[in-house]
Length: 251
Image (cartoon, rainbow, N blue to C red; front, side, top):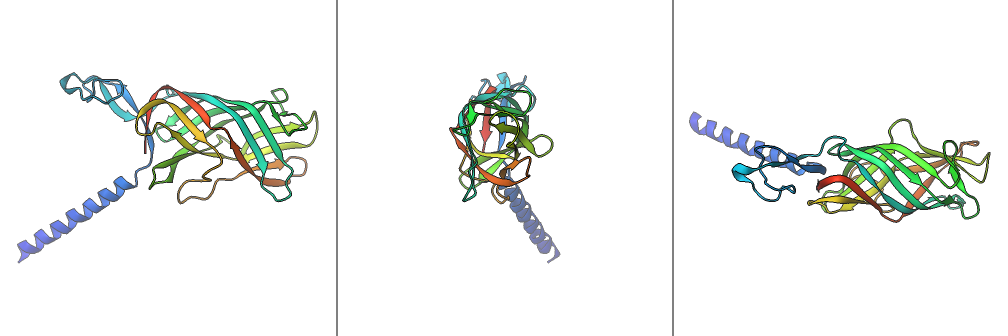
């Protein structure tokens, strides 16, 4: 009888471990992977797609290091006040991601964005210091990737200031007020070639507002002289990003 009970307890324990393991696997988050050169690796090609046997030279591993730099084009981007009576509207028609990098398999850092050809339709807009009119500098920005929808394997990225809460400060129309401060973070859907190696990524704005199960992202503008603040809607053309080396986004 005692032997039977021990077997039953062992079976229950194994089933419990299996359930926990399955739950842990299903709870895994999206991450970037690289095909790294490694003597004795599992694969023989740079895309980690062909088994190498005894002659393997490459290994699939989480992407790490500053070698994974990111640059790209944004083109059109719009900042629009969400209030019913809001008059805030700024459009930038020629923008780009100057640089950035993967700081971990699940996060970006050092992202510098230049919003160019910016105006309200009537007034030119530009950074308060360090640049000329028509240009608003954002960054350095950092933030994680994560699931927008685990069921559909849709991944997002949330980019906010590396320090403080200010994304950018700028004015529209010459010198003096009104001067503005962008606060919060930029959230977008991360697309491109998922689950395959590629040097191309894409960020699309204006869809999802946050990660699954988390609070919605908030982006706001503050008029510096009055501290009056309102939420913003961010939209525009998809960001076309390039990485220095091929990466695989596993999701």
